[in-house]
Amino acid sequence: GADLSHAYLISCNFTGANLKGCRLRGAFLNISDLTGADFRDTDLRWAKLTGTDVTDAKFDGAAYDIGTRLDPRHTHLFAVMKQAGKDIYLEREAAEEVGLKTV
Image 1 (cartoon, one colour):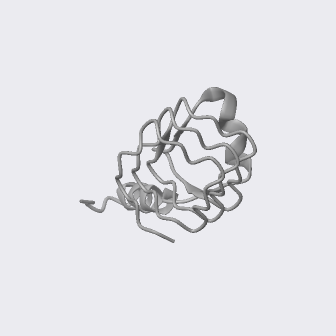
Image 2 (spheres, helix red, strand yellow):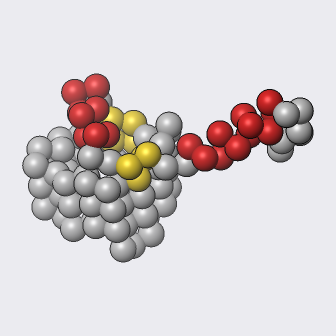
């Protein structure tokens, strides 16, 4: 898939777009039409999808993290997505517990 990391794609029409496997990490897709779009296995870490229409969009296996933003009415999509990026926070927490310095 294409690398669209940190792209500003605000108010775009992605109706039926095939973005499977795309890297959209940190991208802004706010207020876009994502109706029927395919986001399966896409990297959506730190992506912003607020105000979007995600009717019939596919998000199975897409990676999300603490920075991924969806409207409250679309939070059910996290159930089909996979959480990623958590390991860096857990490693830092474990190191702090044993008194190691972290960067």
